[in-house]
Amino acid sequence: MTARRRGVQLTPMETRREVILATARLADELGYEVFAMPEGWGLDSTAVLAEIALATRRIAIASGVLSVWGRTPATLAMTAATLHDISRGRYVLGLGAGTKALAEGFHDVPFTRPAAKLRDSTTKVRALLAGERARLTGATATRPLPLGRPPIPDLPIWLAAMGSRTLAVTAELADGWLPVFVAAERLAGWAEDLRRTRRPVGDRPLTVAAGPMAIADRDAGAARQVAATYAAWYLCAMGDVYPRLVTRQGYGAALQAVRAANPKPSPRHGDVPAEAQVVLDQFTAYGAPGRIGEQLERWSPAADIVMIGLAPGLPWNAIEATLRAAAP
Image 1 (tube, helix red, strand yellow):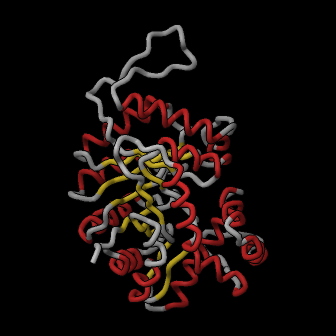
Image 2 (cartoon, helix red, strand yellow):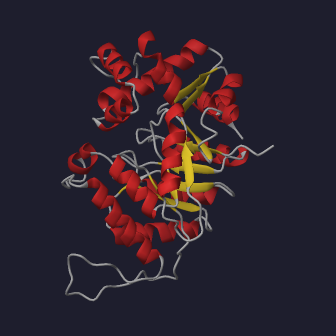
Image 3 (cartoon, helix red, strand yellow):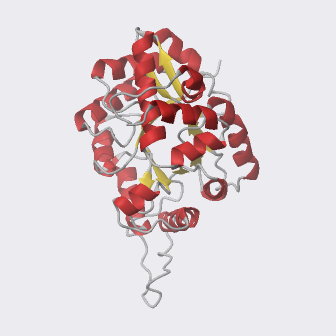
């Protein structure tokens, strides 16, 4: 029997550093393959990943993901090289085009042509990590500099693509695909398309790392409430990226029902009505601990690594129960 490959992914709203570190340690002990930490507008995730690298032994640590609007390609390359060293080769650089709200509302950078920006940043970072000099497009009269350390051409770069243009960039340039809010029944088709159109990066196959938000609780109603709050917040309060993605996958009617049920969205309590149950069925895994592994198998045929997302603010006992229930 092939061993199950599992990973853990947090959300940008999880900012309890001690809880993040404890989660990574437990995931490492339980045999999870990768721990992915995103970055939004709270913690500097790269500093926390350095701490996690020193506190774990085996698990890969991933930026899941860094926004290409918040750092230059040179800074991204230095960050990746440094975390590669600290983790002794366990680091995965995850990049994404992010959202207009983050680029403009936090980094004060115009959110224009995000797929082109993702392509440009990925190309320049990979060149620097391979030992090439910086590919300058602005200060062209200046002598370009290389990264001041030995090349790391095999450092994996995963992209968090969700639109058709960024998926094309992933097929051309990435070692892995790390999406969010991709339905279990849609993942296989998208993954197949990516692999079919992919331009191989060296001889490395494409790693698909995807899965649902998960919550294990012996009280099935309490577990559903956590899943519903997570889904409602993302679909009603986190901009238009996730609603467009859900609609594109064929769940537009369910999306409208969720929005109607949450006129004043809250990160502490949300509602997914019965007529929108498909949203929870396709994007989350919840219920008694014994049911979590069974639900995760819906993602296994298409995902090389089934990632479980943890909702922000969960008490430690819920995090531990979920990690143990979903463990490989």
